Structures are given as C-alpha cells and as structure tokens.
Image (cartoon, rainbow, N blue to C red; front, top):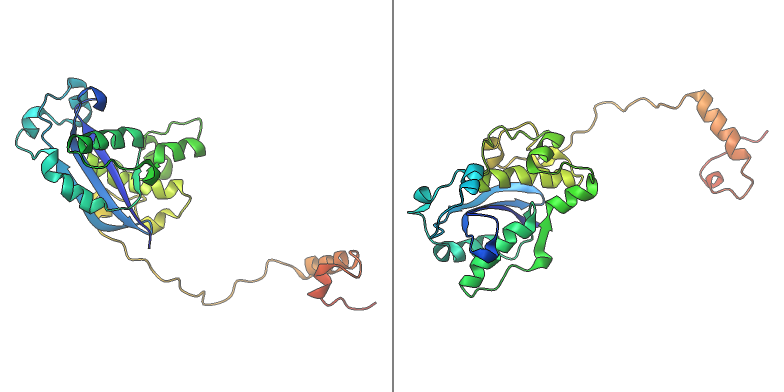
Length: 235
C-alpha cells in the first residue's frame, strides 16, 4: 500500500527567512494514487500582518486570521496526519520551506528533503516549454478548476492530486478527477472490476497477410526462432 500526502500552503508573503509566516495548510491523503477522503485543513494566526500582494492572491486577511489557532497549537495534529508518508507539493521548496521554518520555531525536526515529491519539477521534465502552473496543468489534463477563484490550500491540494496522477502517466479515471468539480473529488471513488468482452474481437489479420508472413518466415533459415512456434507447410 502506497500512502502519500498531497499538500499546499498559503502564507503572509514570499520569504520565510525574513519572517513571513504560514497562514493556511491543506492536505489530501491518497492511497495507491486514489483519494481516501481523509483531509487536513487549518487556518493559522500568523501573529503579524499579511502583505497586500499576498491578500490579493489568497484573500486571507489578518482580521480573518486573528481568532485562528497558532501553528504551535496545530503542529502535532498536522504531523500525526502526514505521518512518514511521501509529501507531494507544487513548487515544493516554497511549501516545505515555510513548514520547516514553523517547525524550527518549535524546535521540532524538519521535514526531510528525501520524502518530498515536487510536481513542478515533474511537469518541467514532461513539458519543458511550459506553462506549468497549477491552472495550466489542470487545463492540459482536463481537470475542472472552476471553483478555484483564488488560491486556497485545500482546493489546490485536491486539484494537485489529479495533476500528480496525470504527470505520472497513470489513468485519470483511476483517481476520478477528470471533468469533475472539486467537491465531487472529496468522495472516494470505487474502482470497477473489468468485465470480460461478451464476444472476442475479430482478427485484424487477413488470410492473405498470414500467408505473406509464413512466406517471410521461410526466408529466415532453419534456425530462426519463429520456426519453433510456427509450422511451415512443406512444399
């Protein structure tokens, strides 16, 4: 069983090393690349102002966050939720950098780099010319992001879960996000067993093509591998 956590964060600004803080974290659990319906979502009081440019992106103001818990109050709950699972994020250095800055303030161990999967790097390898933003990837893979009017940690995590499966080259139908709304992805989808075809498909090989193949095999010599599996009528 492969358990992974897809996560996203929102912050007061762009630089954790200069005092910007975490204000929202959203996580979605997937097992064998299928959403289980388990989620973790918290708003966080950053104890500081939120840059106007950041508010324009996510819409979270200091007034809205004033009565929310401090990171210290939700840290253990967050760490329990993610456990030791690999962490999937888009532009992961940003999210993990802020999470580790908050953990460092509490003298807690950082999230290790070897457990991080960066979907931005995956997207750049697959499509070097870009664009590789989350919106662009949703459009490319046919994932409905119409509910994403602003950046939001939980909504973005749900969308990223679908993008992640597509970037790995796995079937979108397995995850069940293609063409569905974000709300619909919250329910775990049941996989269906393959049904046998009622009648076999007709062969695409004509008798003429099979005869031509037999004649070709004769030209390969008596030691040809194919002759071990094919009876060639003697002239």
